Image 1 (cartoon, rainbow, N blue to C red):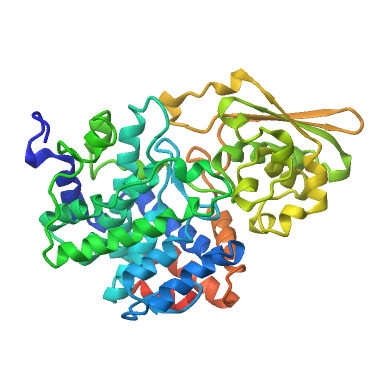
Image 2 (cartoon, rainbow, N blue to C red; image 1 turned 90 degrees about the horizontal axis):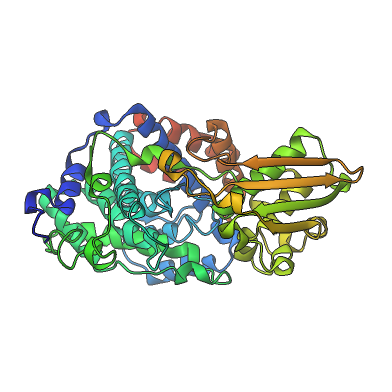
Length: 475
């Protein structure tokens, strides 16, 4: 423990009190709305993942082969397994499509670490009301966001740690603990138990041909569920694991974090107010380019055949998604495609949309898209390195796209805040359309009637007596 932080004001203790006491009625209306959207979005993304990413089917089979108490459901499959196995199986699929919600300043995904473990515990318990579920997800997501932002505001460079893994454990533990009704003391202990599983560097994302990159929320969700259940049974994890001498913030981040961002106005102000949602299943850095291309094509009614060339202009960060250009134009793996600005721009220009079906093994061979990709050229523009982080908290560098048509006319668009950014939030109808599109790829078909019922249940979740109703509609 640092000399100037007392046990009572230590961050783990403060978070534990927040998780225990914040009631649904204390949540601002816009936070409730965002949490419901996060639940809808995360569940939707889970459903098609093992179809779009076939290796995930093996993970589901592993969980079913292990057996155990049948208490929580693998979504889109129907099998029931122990709650931590369900949290693992559902969490493994919640981010692999690169489609999940997130906090841009913190540079991490949010819903995938919280919703699967919360849903697993809720189904295990039974009779969990929508109001209680919303409150549990809200505190879990807020813990992740605050940890991420506190570190980001003192960050000198990215890495080496993967924030989604390190901070996700605490969000998952918070949500599971809240649903189990743990006391402040037990929540503090549960955080300590979950802390021993904190690991993971940016090596997780450095290899684009690895399909493990987006699977980490499975490990996070399992940890959160088991930590909360162990604390509930009297296992004593170390108190104060966030700010203690050998705790998370001093050990992993050398004590360099913004403590006011971590704890200031906790329970009154919510960092998850800045949650963003993805309208397109690709790396967030590609989103400004997709947005610019779709705008140019749509506003000017351009057809694929009318396009002569496309120039994309990038700052230093965006350049990593363009170089080497030949490889980026024709990616060989799904993750490679999602991390390729030229390929994503080509999809947008060729099809006038970007959706799940554009990132399958078959779609990577689409002749029209590959033909369009050959028209894409990339150039550096130092002006695009500048972002107004102090006033907008935007970690996405802006993008500029120029499309030249065959008659020589040039159409240009710069995008600073892409659609889905918290300053340009997605419309509810677009989130619902995204959910339905995802559900249509579920390996186990779900009727349109049940999909509609699930949407209505989630969007009016505060009126639901048992959150397991959602699972029954989607299993």
